[in-house]
Image 1 (cartoon, rainbow, N blue to C red):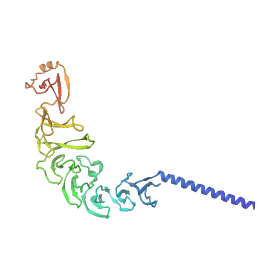
Image 2 (image 1 turned 180 degrees about the horizontal axis):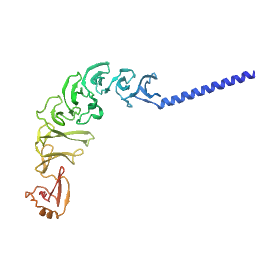
Image 3 (image 1 turned 90 degrees about the horizontal axis):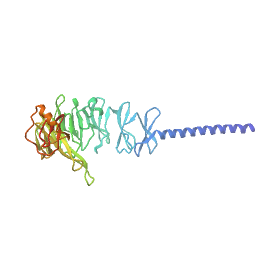
Image 4 (image 1 turned 45 degrees about the horizontal axis):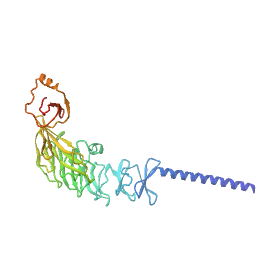
Length: 381
């Protein structure tokens, strides 16, 4: 009898030890899972698995609905209808609500659409780009656009381009790639709106800019720029060697954030001019150099330009109004001993004085060249 009691006690103790060990393991595993799990959104979470992969967990069932190498589009509070996943180096789409597979990982590259048309760009194994519909799960626009990862991948997006080559629909349009780094623009039907013959399509996303700038390469590292309107109609037959926006941004007194376009600095055949934002000529293309200047005013500043001809810098408002007929860039003053320098240098000062007041001798600068004017802005050196 005594032996039976001892046996029962031993079995009970062993059972208690097993239960405690199991409970400890369950608690440790729960803590491990809790530590390695994060919410993706209100429907899904992601868990780091012991083999280095990740599990997508449906929070309503607590089940792992997919195992992948990586989740590319993870973002707390993500509102996209799909998520990008990677397996064996290929990308696919899963539902952001259920975690179920929409397209198995099969694409070299893929992007999540932020427009309302459910079209997402992908690159297949033949390095052709097309578009899938993530709602109907069908190919919407055939895989026909030449994609070169050395030219179009994120680390090479900028280069000679200002536009962002994310291949995502915006306002019903999307950039598409072509041979030699050229790009074009399509609509949601896959129709070419701008042919694939440009290296850049600038401002097309920016609705605050009335014009779109098209940049094409005429020979190696030599480009021409032209304008079209937001209906993609040419605005001028002139192509420029350089186009720079004159623009500003800031907060008004009302607190409204404002982006304002004033015009463009343009260049052809080595000479510069200025266009207003309606592409009317403000300053003809006859200046040796034109650059932008900020003067205190509305928002953060008032935009002006300094136009240089025959080494004379003049300050203009962006509408072409002359503000200063000899603009002094810097205010470095010299004492009168410079008279002796002028006398011994053999330089002949300009006899016609410029309007304006200053004290002493002042250094002025044009790009990387320097000169000196006297108190009446007469050029001394």
